[in-house]
Length: 341
Image (cartoon, rainbow, N blue to C red; front, side, top):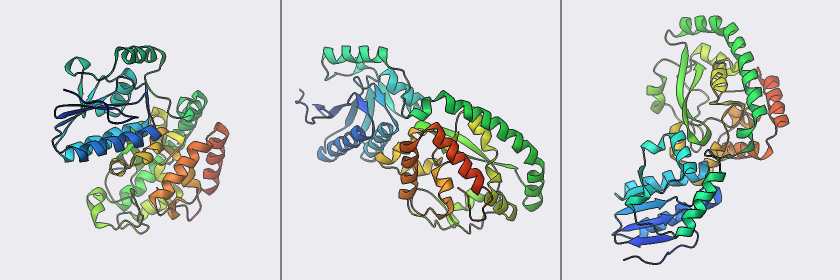
């Protein structure tokens, strides 16, 4: 009824028109690339395949790259009309799915409904590992640093006081120049891809989102930028040049959705086209400032450069490094060429 496993790292067992893919103990960037390739090969090689089951019974760690591989495989299966189901989901994996809301997207079945290809010893090993592992993954030291979080809280409170001081002059200027909402909110993806609303002082016309398709994208890859974007108001250009438009993001920092220093917060449509390695940038919280801010954010012209700067931040991170980037940001804050994200 079933065949022997056909992959070394990610064993595949076939049951009639169903394939069961067993996921490794860890699903980080290295394993995630192999996992995606295994599923791609499976979807392309079997024209009679009707269902793919992803067995997580041994998985005790999954970071953003692993999550990205699952998402990509899910999309590929959907395009071919093949059912895609998760089973034996461990608490560690379920915590990530709950965090990102993907538990409401994927079909998740209990092990009682599926013939498992694993042995009893593997099941017992998973249970032991589960008891010893915290539910949410520690994807990067900065995420677990209480000192970084303390700095964020203190910094955001100071920042909100500054925001309150500037609020009325900015609000009046926005209303005079282009009547409408004072604030602009947009969905961004934070740690592990969790979505949240980022807040800014509105620097564009009221119907800017509807007009986005009419504006040419001047950069390469998965993000959008246009130096002479016609949607930006006169007051908005001043707010962006001085970064005053970003003051409301101190509220995002206080809530823990962002950090004072981190990676550039991407939009969902950017994340939609990520390849597996690019999901690594979601292993840390997005920041109000970071490598892209102090290295000429207006001059960044390719997505590869953004990825490189984000990974550089992750590699070099220390509390002192954060403070250094904050100081650099303050020094260039009112530079006339300092552009906006």
